[in-house]
Image 1 (cartoon, rainbow, N blue to C red):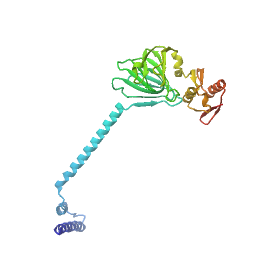
Image 2 (cartoon, helix red, strand yellow):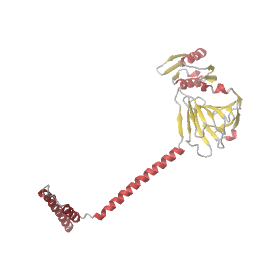
Image 3 (tube, rainbow, N blue to C red):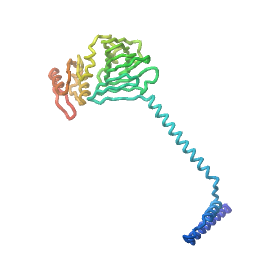
Image 4 (cartoon, rainbow, N blue to C red):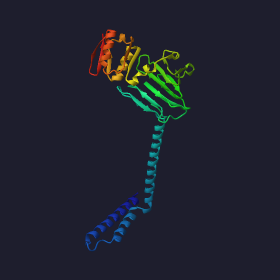
Length: 306
């Protein structure tokens, strides 16, 4: 142990002496006669040898640095791979704000026109054997023909088509969480999720509805598609509709809040048609007169009371 200590001290003394020699040489030299570079290099070489610094050990440092750089590249490559998988497989979600209507072009060239407050989610490239999409709200679909079925899931219901035009209304916030499918062209299959044996076929000009309390969708009935999809022309059409549903629709259409302080009237129904409504107060005034209610304006909407 002492020999090692003495060896270290001896090396350090030699290093100090050599450095002092270099310093003295540089101090004594005049500008016209600078220190010889070979002398400086020789002195430094002696210092390194005494200190145990081996020049041949330098490549080991560069090897480690190279491995570190390769590791960084590998991490970046993995990150890109994960990002690619995310883009390919993670659903894309589009939400339409209250008070607006938007049309979305889907990966296969189909389009979905979304009513205010609606949300759809779908794979960016429609990978797999089906073109799957989920909906919360109301949308009018124009589907391009393809061997891959076009499937819309909404409130635990399934609408399956090949290529056609149809409207789906299915709000998770509505009291019955009812799904209504109306066909404008072609045909669709409509059934509760995981119960394809209870499916019904809808043809042009037909509609059906289904909610959680029903074993299967209602029998197809004829309907005026322009009426049921009137929202696309900014119309408001309520046919025997619950007041709770109507108030929800007004909230989405006009981006307001309606507080119903008379819950006992929420299930009462109403039929009303508005071709181009601009002012929610006019509609609420009509409802209040028919249903013997009162309303007043609030900071962000209206309150309904008796």
